[in-house]
Image (cartoon, rainbow, N blue to C red; front, top):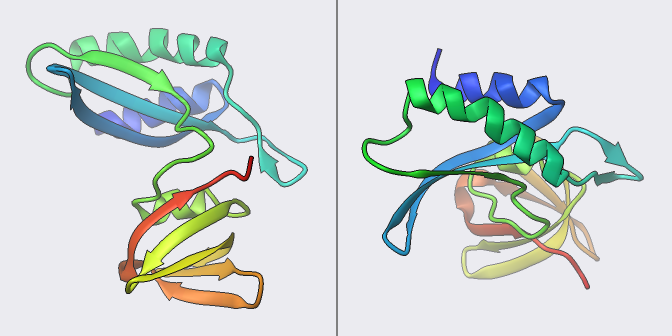
Length: 148
C-alpha cells in the first residue's frame, strides 16, 4: 500500500475524510500537510473538523511517518482542515465540494455559483441564470468561497 492510502485508512478510522496531502516549503521549513474534512453534512453544509480530531489524527499519523517518511530530511507534520475557502485542483476536490459556492476561471471568463454535481470529467455549476456544464481540463483556476 502507498503512504497516502495508509493515511487515508487512518483518517477514516476517526470518521473523517482525506481531502489532500501536500509537501510545501515555508520559511526554509519543509511541511507535510494532511488536510481532512468531515463526512458529516448538516442542512446541506459539511460539518467542521475539531481541533481534538486533528490532534488525535496527528498522533496516529506520526508513527507511520517515522517508518515511511514522506520526504528525505527534516519536515514538520501539519494536520488540519483545508478551510472554507480552498483551492480546487483535482477532480476529487470538486467531488468533495458539491453543494458549495465556487469561483472558477474558464477561458478568461469568471464563473461563480454553486457546484451542483460532478459526472466523470464534467463539472456542473448553478449560476444565477443557468446551470453551466464545464470540462474539468478547461478550468484554469478554481476555489470555494464563503460570503461573509
